[in-house]
Each structure stands twice: as structure tokens, then as C-alpha cells.
Image (cartoon, rainbow, N blue to C red):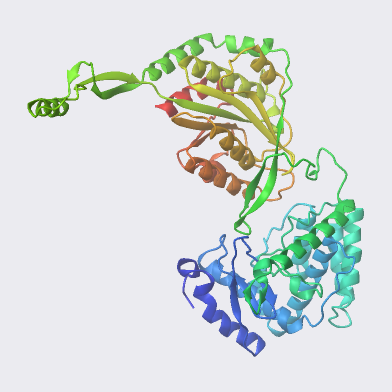
Length: 567
């Protein structure tokens, strides 16, 4: 089959060939269904009706998409052929459930490969050859799946290698699913003793071709979109039961969470008032709703004399910028029509008025037009990256001090020009703690209080850019000006302590920028990272970013760049 299934509808393009493929693997017919709902379900699952496959895998296209459907169908067929027993949940915790499901996946894949060795090559395409360098629970489970599928692979993590040895020892006398429940329980307890964090709410079975493993449990409560009864689609009560049961397991798993530390992801703050935003997960092709919590942090004020002295050293540049922005504020001539007074007569209106007079009607005497200068109406939010990397020392200052200095120069010039201007900043410590600092608000003067807040800030933590842009865009929607702009000032690629693959936050930030732009608030970025073009083009597009190659020139270059941007 050579059809590009991404071009003609995903599953629908390969449904026929998959049916034949499953018949060849199992020797009988398997019914195929599409699983897509308003909840964004994108995982393969098995039910008494047959095999349910996603209608689309949004992160794949072309031949890779077709291979993914084949891999998913082959894995499901292995379950149908070799998963001969159901496991009891009883008092198992979410982490133990995940490990037992992983071990059963490895067992049935090994049996399928004995019959058809070519399946190993198909499934290995969905593991990164270089592996993943992280010791989070999700990554350790993924690494264990990799070594169990590839006998030539060696992992450096002691827990992964121990789990591999114990699994093979448990299967030496023949394939035995019964021992996997106890083995998974022990391995889960080991991770708990190691204080490795496992978040059951965010855990996604990987790699992407594997199903949700609900089929293998006796206490299965399928998601809403999986449940079908004689009366058609229903299942709201069943879905709610599944959620309630899930929450109970999450509560039980709390004792396995690591102690809070500066280097660990913290659990969600117990505060329902915190603004929460979704985050795009490119691996599964959907948003994780209510994923990132914004904590608005009050900046600490310090003595602003050093910052004022550095700004004063650029007095000539500041005066020049003020003049240029004032000239811009004069704007372009705007013609006002149908005026009672003016410099010129409007011919069309005058002819209409004369016609009314000759017809005995009262004419409209607004027959003049005049010109006036149209003043631009703009609100701009300068969003500062306050991550730990901005503390890098330069010849006579730090990068963060230059960022604050440039912000003040730009802010003074914009304020003198009459536009609205605000300065905010962000840093993050995992998705539950995206700190958002507000140094200057719209309408607030650039006084000593603002300078004191900027002087007191220090770089810390990480850079979850997408969440910060979403919150900034929300705040900008409250501005009632004709034009709005978010100007992001950063020094590096988005990253955070609970995300092992930085590209995930790059694609999430790109989604946030697209959404903000579509809502009327474009986002432009200025970066001092010499390698920034590798990821800025993905986030902001080819024309909406600028890289400043000489960091020390930031206070001069940023206001000049703003002038070109406004032009």
C-alpha cells in the first residue's frame, strides 16, 4: 500500500490494509473502530467489540504514520493472542500498575517476535536510538521498555538493569504472566524507596503505538468514549467512576512523591485560585488541560541607585529615542470626511446638498473635509526571561542587569511617546510553579518603585515559556488599544526540570504564540543566544525574532529594534 494516510484521513486510509494484516496475524477477523472524542483521546485500546485505533496521530504523517498504525495493530494483535489472563488491581498503586502493564507488554511482544522476528524492527522504530538521559519515573519506564524489547541494548541505570534481570529470570521456565504482578509490585516499591516521582495524572504509556492496557485488568472501567451499550453511546457514570478510582490511586501514591527540594518538581499547590493553562504535548498530539499553574510573585524592591546610574550613562541615546518615538506618535495624516468646517470641500457631498436645496429639502451642511495626524494607539508588554542562566557574569555586570537596563531605557522612551508599557517576567520550577513577576503595570510611571523592583530581581529556576506567554496574552486582552504587542526577551531555549525533551516546550511555546497572535496580540522575541535560530524560527516564525550577537550592546540595540519593529 502506497497511500499517504495523512493526506486522506489517517485511519480511514489504512483501515482496509490493517484488516487484512490483522487477519493474517491472528487467523480470524478483528473489528476496527475509530476512537476520537471531545476529550481528545488518542490512545489505542481493546474492548469486547474489537480494536479501537485513533482516527489521527497528529505528530506523524506520510510513511511514518502508516508504520505507526501497523505497529499499533501488531501490538494489539499480540495482546489478543497471548494475554490470556486478567490481573487484579486490589491495592496496587498507579506506579505499580504502570510497571505491570509494561512487563506484560514486553512478554506478549517477545512471544510475537518468536513467531515473526520482523516485528522487533517495526516496534524499535518508535524508540530513540540514543535513548533518554533522565531518571524521572516516566523516562525510567520508557528505558526499561527499550531494553526488554532490544536484547542488545545496555542501560546505565541500576534500577533498569535490575528490572531487566528479574524479568528474564521470571520467564526462564517459560512465558508466565502470573509472576508479573508480584514482580511489578516489588519494582514499584523500589522506585518509591528511591524517592522517584511518579505523577499518575500525567503519565502516558510509551512508546506511542502501545495501547492503554485497560484490557488486561479485571476491574477495568473504560473511558467514556470507549463504552458502548445496547442503547448506543453512553457511559458518563462509568467515566466518572473511572476518574474517582483514578483519584483514589493518586492519593495513595502521594507517599512515593519525593521531598520538596530546589531541584525537584513540586506537587500542585493546594490553591484553586491559581490561573491554570493547557500545554501542548507533541508526543500525543493534544493539549493537556489545566496543566501549568501560574503563581504571580510580588517582586522584592531594592536600592535602585546602581540601575539609575547605568541608565543615566545612556542619556544621549535616551533623548534620541524619545525624539524618534515622538515623531512616530505624530503619525500619518488621516482624512476626516463630512465635517461642518474644514480646509477643503467634499465634492460628492456638496453636489448632494445642492440637489436637496433644489428639491426643497433641508440639505446636510457637513460638506467639508479636513486632515489631522492620526496617533497610533499601542500597548506593549515586555516579558523578561528570569531563569538561572541570566545570572551569567559579563565584564562589568551580569546578563540580567543588562536586560533590566535595556528594559528601563525602552520603557522611558515609550512612556515619553505616550504609548502604554508594562514590564513583566517569568521563571519556572516545574509545571505547578510558573512564577510570574509584575515589575511595572500599564499606566504606572517609571519611578523609583519600579526601578527598585527591577534592581531586586535575580535569575533562578527554569524557562517554561509557553505558559508565561499564555498568561501575558490573557493580561493583554484587557488592554483596550488598537494595537497590542508582547516582546519576549530571553537568553536560551525553553526548558524545565520536569520535561526531559526540550523540543516539547519549544512546540508548546509555538502553539502559545500562534494562539496569542490569532487573538490580536502578536509576539516578537529578542534573544542573546547565538544558537537561538535553531529553535526561535519554530516558535516565533521566520520574521518575528531577532538575535543580538553582542550581549553588551543589548541596552542600545533593544530600543533601536523596537523602533524598526514599529515602523
